[in-house]
Image 1 (cartoon, one colour):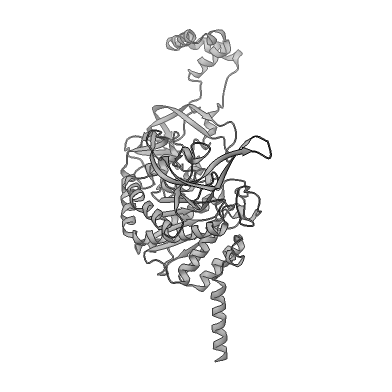
Image 2 (cartoon, helix red, strand yellow):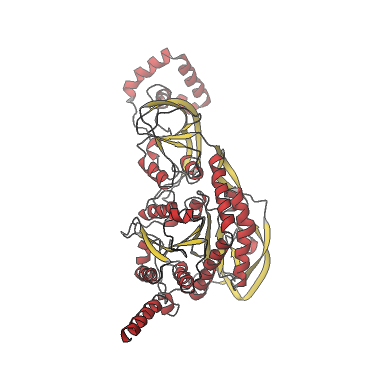
Length: 579
């Protein structure tokens, strides 16, 4: 009897220890470290059979990414979850470890759902405890100068000093590759990435960035705008945390209005949109007390769980329709601009913005007077229009040399075919006519933009092992928005193909002089072209070197690969020999 009592007391002690988070044990002043978070989830998984802690890949810090899976029916295989017709909600935390509310809130969420036996019937919840493990170890309490707690927290950059919320397309970090493995293995219908805001002061604890409605498939956009967002706002207000759209002010303060946030695919929710997953980036306000920020985040995560459970059948139908539509879709918007004419208004709860002399400079400085809260109607510009649209090809042809491109396509569940033999294929080719490049590095790259293309049809030789990507897949948006150079976050813009932008051969002028003269004697059209160009460009007429260069670039000697985008567009369904 005594031994049984001892065992029961031991089991109760284990369960109790599994229920107190490091955040709670600190008096709600501290956020969990990486080791504390993993130990906590490990104990939860040992205590409750409805929880399982998995690992995927590696990170630049040398540790794998963990995923805690919560399943009422103890189904922990992604394929089995889909077969059981359950939705998947993926929650990502600590992409910026200095914004740690989600780290602690997710631990509370998991504990409460397990302890109180509240796991949803039709939803499996996947939680990444800390995505930027590297940055979480770089722990201080000073790197976010404007933030009100917690006592210590991690750093925004990872161990390569990348901002991981700019890395989802270029994938310079191992963290990104591990995340994409998780995402494309589980294929969630709903994704939430927890953050903390910077910027103006206002009354709200929680702000929200949803996947932008204008970028989404219409059926998903309609559900998001008319059903999910109203429910989120109503339920958060009901639990004491009225929300506002993310405060992206057009002027110094929100009083003159705010705009929607267009998350391109470099960001987590922009990336998930490429897969017809509805994404959210909740941002708590940095100046609110840390315990309020954690509480608001935890309540929001519980509301997401409840809404996905409520709408599980509808969410499944919408996702299936969107995937089918995208597979058949012919026109794709690949760049966007804000419509500055269309706006709506809403009642915004802020604080009066005032100015007073600075104690530092003696000049006027902005401050928000919390003794003067206000509610006023402000403008909200939240409509984006396509600025660049492309027609998809039948398929893209990718030479096998571009191995990182193929790796990322495969990682994102893109079906890839391989040529079984050497073959000549007629296709549409792009030549890069013009582009702009940033003058300073951005996340390890000199990012291109404003790309202009010349398109030609050519028959090129391809080889056994080269790749064919047919554009008839649910992953079409990922394919098109990475492979089309004009897309805002294309592989081209992220410098994947910069080697094509420089010439590999040239000429010695004293030798090419005789060759050029012979070319002009034999090719009258070339001579006429040169004369016409000289007439238009007096500077060319004054420069012997420039005229030689013009002749060279318009001759058979000029390298055809210079500026030629290496990925071709197959515009007709040609029968190819494929493996």
